[in-house]
Structure formats: C-alpha cells, structure tokens
Length: 366
Image (cartoon, rainbow, N blue to C red; front, top):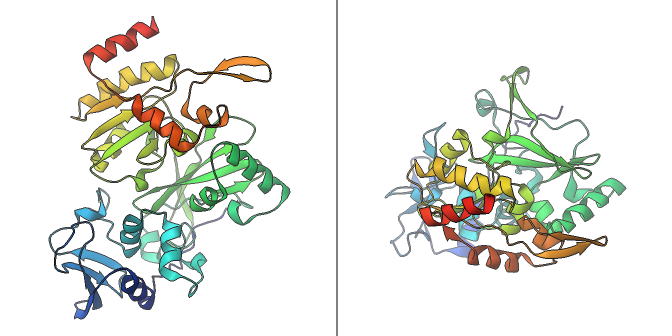
C-alpha cells in the first residue's frame, strides 16, 4: 500500500513575502516566532494592518479573532490559520492553485502537495493515515490508454482537465479515486469505476509513528460530506447525493453519498454553521423526495433553516428510448447544458421546506 509520506515541507519565507508583496501593502517586524508581515485583513476590510503572517510558521493570525479562517476543528480545538488556507480563501481557489500562485516557478510544488507531503512525524503519531492501492497514479499527469479513457469519461460528467488536476484524482485500472479532506487532513479515498455507478468507500488504515498498521476502521458514506473543506463558513450549503451532482452544482455544494443525512453528517453541518440555511437537492425520484421529508425532520431539530430544490423532469431521447432527467448531472450529460445554466435552474427552483411545501411533496408520493 502507498502510505502518506512524512517529509512535509513548509512554505519558504521568501515565497510568502514575495506573494504578500504582490498583493498587499505590508509592514515587516520581529515577532515572538521570528519575522512576520502585517497587512490589512481583506476579509475585515480597512483595519490598519492588524493581520499577522508568520514567515517561519507559514501561519496567520488576526488580533481580533480568526473567524476569517472558518470553523473550529473539534479534534484540535483550533481553526486552520495556515498561510495556504489564507491564500485559498483570498483567491477562492484550490489548494494546488494556491501553492502554484505562492511558489511560482521557484519551487517544485510536488513536495508541498496533499496528500503526499502533508504530515509531519509528530502528526503521524496521532492522525489517521490512508492508503491507495499499489500502482495508483495521479490521473492528471498520466497519458496511457486507460488514463485517457478515464479522462474522456470524466469529461462527459463535467470534469475538465483543470478540474481533474485541481481535485487531485488518482486512478488504477478502471477506478478513479477522489480524496476526501477535513481541515486540510486527508481522511480517506472514495472510488468509482467507469463501468458501474457505485462509489466505493475504502477502509481506513491507522498507522503508528513507525508506519505500521495498528488498526482498521471502515469509512462509510455516513461519515462523508465531500467538499467539506471548500465550503464558505457561516453561509449556506447545498446537499446533493453524488460527487458528480456536487461538481455540476458547484459553489457551496456538498455530496452526502446517500439520500438521508446521518448524525455524523449533521455534526459536520453544525461545524460549518450555514446561517443562511441548508438546501436539499436530491434526485427527482421517490427516494429523493422521501429524503427531503426525512432530512427536514432531522435537520430542523438542530435549528437549521431548510430549503429544497428538485431537478425538473425534462424529456430526452437516448439510443431511441424516451427518458426523463432525474438528477442534476443529467442536465449536463443528456441535455448538454452548461454548469452555469444548470445552477440557474437549481436556484430558480429553491423552495422553503415549510409545512405547505411538505404537504405538496407527500401528495407527489401518493
């Protein structure tokens, strides 16, 4: 099995200062942990340089609080205030894109990328590591026959070459592997074969400080909210069923891996704190409509505002057979709509999950 390497490299101080100089006016001073840069926090607007960036630790801190960094990790009791996270939020980009912007052509970003180089020896003693099967390769860099076939398949599901790279997809045989992160920590890999519809949740292998497997726990879809690290905190979230639907709907969307949310997923939602509400966007079938009713009952107990958006049923012909759309990804694959067009349809169909609307849904099921 391929284990996560423990040779984590921190961002070079000169790269941090070069990036800050390109984007902000700043002051430089000596701090408790060495040199640090002071800038105005772009998320708090004009605030007279109260935002510190430590060059040695590649970490950020605002004197008035670090809510800008998103939710608190319940495992550590801290927010992720890394410089990488700051750049990701500022640029609204992926981890890989943030690294490329910071490092430019001065460094080989492979030494900094998740998941290969994200864990120090100290972290490895207390965090779960996960493994890919032997032979799994990064899909974006591969050009063999199987890789090209998988790329074409992913293209038909809405993934561009840029998306394949940005999402750090791996492959082996006909399986594509998606990494799942929480608080910039790789939790496990989820895979899907090109020849079937099933997403597979591999087991988690727990390593000790010497890299030996000391236990195995099962990763299940009940632990899964794909896109967790990309959600803007204290805003709204959309919950759909599968990764492909999540990708098509885009911003602020999570994939639950199933129709009805679990207690673990609700805990994760509460960590994200979607103050504007949760929008349930399942498939347009009996299971999906039933899931809205069930999820409204589950989520409303936690004080969350609940809405829903059901994909309209639109006719299309495939191989001479008359069919109708039932999920958001089909608007892309079968109707050739753009992701922007699909998102507009989704947003236009958002309804409040009030008593009247739930009565209408129950009538549909009869």
